[in-house]
Amino acid sequence: MTSQFHPSNGDPWPAPHHSEPVSGFVTVPGSKSLTARHLVIAALSSSPSRLSGALRSRDTDLMIEALRAMGTTIEGDGDDLTIIPAPLHGAHIDVGLAGTVFRFLAAVAALADGPVSFDGDAAMYARPIGPLLDGLEQLGVKITAGEGPRGRTLPLTVEGPASGSAVTVDASGSSQFVSALLLLAPHLPHGLTITHEGESVPSLPHVAMTVEALRRAGASIEESTDGPVSWTVAPGPLHPGHITVEPDLSNASPFLAAAVATGGTVTIPHWPAQTTQAGAHIVPILERMGATATLSDGNLTVTGPGSISGIDIDLRDAGELTPTVAALAALADSPSRLSGIAHLRGHETDRLAAIASEVTKLGGRCVETRDGLFIEPAPLHGGVVDSYEDHRMATFGAILGLVVPGISVIDIACTSKTLPDFPTMWEAITT
Ligand SMILES: O=C(O)C1=C[C@@H](OP(=O)(O)O)[C@@H](O)[C@H](O)C1
Ligand SMILES: C=C(OP(=O)(O)O)C(=O)O
Image (cartoon, rainbow, N blue to C red; front, side, top):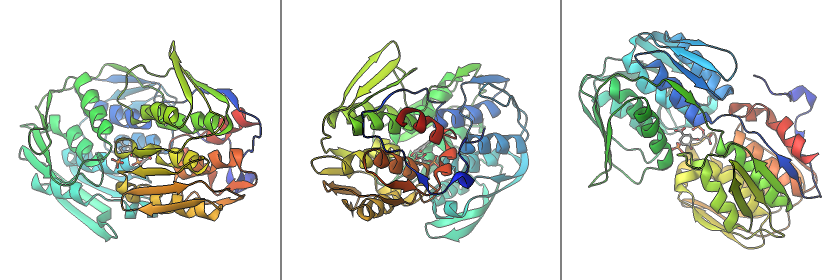
């Protein structure tokens, strides 16, 4: 799957400006996070399984290639995949800029019969993984790693086997450290108890998503919040069967924000009534910013207000939504405080610095706080928004460009990380 948009068509990309309210019906492809988990669970299962509605994008294709390189057969080149597990062997893995591939497979590599080496994009060298590597070492896994600005990093080699049944990890930098160990856990001879020690774990819905996906495949998992938070996973075979992936609700958020920014209406079909996706938090957030939302027969419809209200919100559980919420906050008529998101400094880019810098560049008022952003109303003007190779910074620029004339976005093609057709889909509702 490739984007319809190629940098040779013009970079920076002139963000569509829409002076009228947008109106659109947007079908969003499968969830990156669910696709990643179901692929890993299927590759480690005891029977073949099928994944329908899988996301095909740079991150998920890197996951597919990595699992294939370790011995898994994955058939199908669209969004319907058959996964035939086999014992894993040593391989070299390109993690790109995909946190899920980097963290999940660093843990899974401990099950391979041979060393697994990892490398990735230059920007990945700045993303944290040290606490997960410490945890794997507690299980006797051999690690060799480079040294980066946030501790141990790429290039990395992981060599199992893993032994032992308990690990303590500081997952305050990324929930993916816990998810990675959970995915490994059922395949260890005695299972695993994972205990978190440190400041609070961000993105907890993503941990719940891992637990739910494993339980659906037959894993037995107990969570304890009595004292330090921990998860105990029993050893045992997994049989995922046939899974259908929900649409990616975080990727839906810029389209819903388009309705809010312009006072228009956008409908997203197949919106799940219940989900572990943190992206679902966007609905109450947009309502607090003045939008109205209805869910009927799986169609989520959001209608924007005449003017956007600022918001004071802890986004620790749904940090992925920060660039979308920050773009709307920069267009709001009252101040906004986004907190609980210090860990975004270790995302695809330092998202707090990136947002503050780009809003300021466009004439807005946005400063970093210890754990987030403070944004005040100010008139914005046109300019070139840097995406910092970060798909969500690119969509942040697109949202602002809808209402502020003269905005263009550098490297809109980086949206291929999780939504290869973003430019085409955006142009469909805005032109
Ligand atoms: O497990 C996952 O699929 C994810 C977990 C979260 O990571 P952090 O806990 O590092 O924020 C989220 O931000 C990321 O986009 C996807
Ligand atoms: C943080 C994100 O990605 P990753 O899975 O690479 O951590 C994201 O998509 O917002």
